[in-house]
Amino acid sequence: MTFIRVAQLKSRVSLVVGLHSAAAADSSYFGGASAWLEGIPAKPVQKADGFFVFGDLQEGAYRLHIASEHYFPEQRDVMIASVGTIVHVRLLPLPSYPFRPADTLLRLSVQDKQGRPVDNAGITAVITEEDAVRARLTGEKQEMGSHEITVGALSGSIRIGDRYLIRSRSAKPFEETVEIAGVIDFGKRFQLAGPLQHTYSRGAYLLPVVQTRTTARGEAVLAFPGIGLKQFTAQLSLHREAPVQEPAVLREVVLEEGGTVHSGSIIL
Image: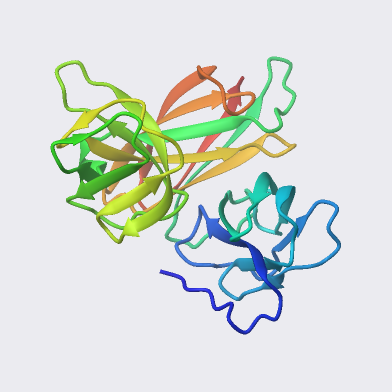
């Protein structure tokens, strides 16, 4: 867990922005990252662990911009409160990201029917094997509308910004994708970015979800965390603009741990 020291700052802390990499468990390659607020000339204090601290801002709405050599640029609308605001941003790696040799990667490109590259196409990959389960829900029920989940049988780590498919174990299974917004009790209880859309009983499980988007050249890379399987299947869904209700293309790809698969061009 990362702790931020702000006691020595002379200005009042108004906004803390934490960057989290979808490609690495640490703050690799955040050294050249920059963060700024639209229309605000003052620069934030940059910490070595990927955090930016803005001070002495008026309460209200701002637009946050983030740029980095190795990640897609991001922008967010943030609301500054009197007690200060903390925003966590998950950064997606560009195809040029310096991955490690042992990383499990899927590289592909997206074109339209005329053979032109599709920019900013959303891509989602869900690991479909139950052997790849990251954790299971505990407690009698996790109620619809709740912004928290409690898990057990954790395999690996769950980080802020991670996305998972929660799948029920009922006779008529249902599922939804959730995003981890905070760690309440390390390894046990997590805050969600949005409310649960269903009520889940004990034993519902979390499958890893990896998301990215295409560059202006239609290229994309998906970096899979440690799944724990030598070989696994990812179900891909693609769409032109994120988010949308229904994917335009579905495809399954078999990957091997530590290897790179080149899926070629997909027509969208």
